Image (cartoon, rainbow, N blue to C red; front, side, top):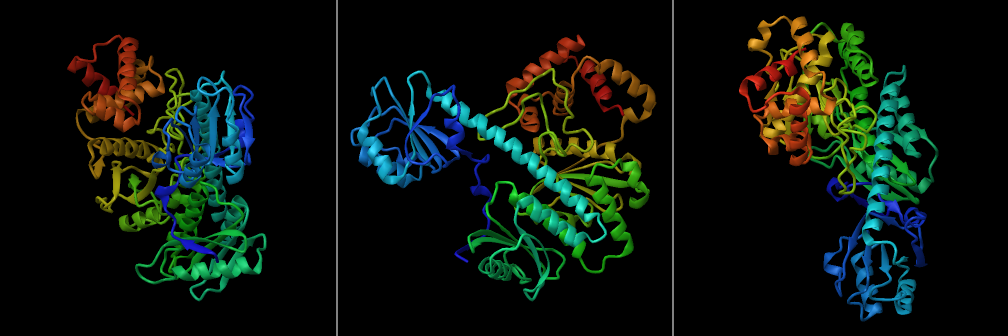
Length: 520
């Protein structure tokens, strides 16, 4: 084992890197590789005309320059390589007519990719192309994670769930997954065989974790030419999950985290029959079954739905939260565009690599309050209503009113809205308020009136109006809650006023719309 370290979630780039070759393949840019390999990954883009850009580089970026202050190409390349830049892009004209031969030679010596940017291509076009490729890669990765979550949940519902989950995990990561006992022996394994050196290194890495109180929950390393990772399972049995793969993608840690939660539940001791039945109901919920179909397994209720965001970034944070709240019924909610956990404001609402996606007002999409569509990163939990929901350190919680098992969709929407209010008000816990004058109105009549009043509004406009009214017309707090710019909030509210033909500054109008938005 050549190295071992605990994963550092904060060190990951905001989006999967894109290969330089993908940028070079864009005919509209006209880029030409003059030196170095084309298969290097690009994590971000930076433009600098400093004589020494070293202090301003993070490493892994495509550095673009027109050579305004380039006097010593060899020294310049030395500093760029020392800073860890992935590649150098040199724009010809207006300073240089051609790329200096000394610069090409220096890049060749260091193996630093050097790209010529033609005069017709502005640096902003190159940067925009990189961010677009990152957004596409991010979308692909989110879809991959969601498909893996569904595959793992399906495996957990099979007659032999532990081997099935290991097999699904190994298949999704393209490697080998091993469940180690407390004594370091293999309890179960799946996937392709790995070299003996890698197998020993993986067993040693798993032994670093073990059942020691306060010990590390996960570790990573290399061995036998493979990337290795180990995760301690919950349940107090000292079991450890080991994974060996050729590559480690940005979403692999999240996929392994889902497997850890499922394996922890499946291998937990003293699992009574009622717990097994309820966990099976959870799996069916993860697979998208209607709540009414699992009401019999869950029991009539009432239940409380909790949405949570936060934690310490480890795969075990959600499991720890579930244990603290006293429930095994949990959905880790990794989320992906177009799948479970989708959050879509319009046709192209993806944000990646620091680029802000656009919103299409006319697009209809299930907002964050739509049942089964929690925002990416949201943990959803089911608790008996008799179990107290208390604030948890490091987490922001939104709790629904007590609902029957057949009304979990409504409780899911209530918890989503409560979580947004908690985030906007910086409260640790916000509960849905289900009482008041609205409870005196006939539900069917109220729903029919609400549909008529709100008919002109699209999904994104309706959700924006709901959050804006709930936050007393605050532009800034609404922008924070919806994760959009305050100017977008103003534009949407103005559009709502025009479509509804109402004065939203009138308190009577606000009250009427609020009741309509809260109607079932």
